[in-house]
Length: 172
Image (tube, rainbow, N blue to C red; front, side):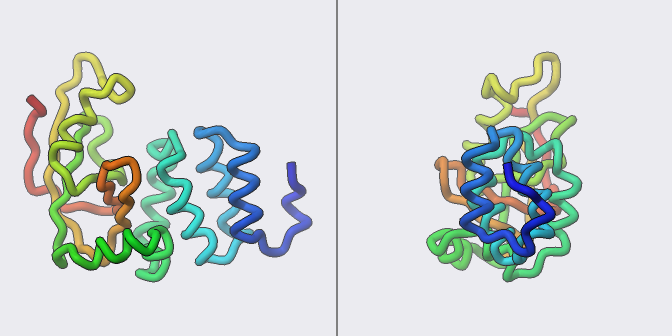
């Protein structure tokens, strides 16, 4: 492993290589969060966007991530997206309707979707299913300029710090 005190600025390439070589899906995000002060802001935000879907414990770090996302400049949020994601985001209306399939315990997550069907599926997936809890479908709106759009994995994921929930209903 690397000596943290010996580096003044950690490059995107070095941080990416380190995280992918040494960290499993539960270690990637905490490692990246530790790298935040060691990297330039554009590199750190870009790497966060690239690694987001490869991290399995976003909920464990959601308050810290929420604080970063709330304070993030528009430039930082754009850095989390690839070119095609930035272009697609530009086609969305100024106020974007988003959906989240969840349970009461995780309703305040950072990941939403543009697709109602994708959201409805999430609480039914074995990985997320909570026996005895009522699965929910939340509908909300968020300002386009405060979101990150991720188009990998066919989820049309919207990452945002704050959503105004306009509707809540049980998932059938």
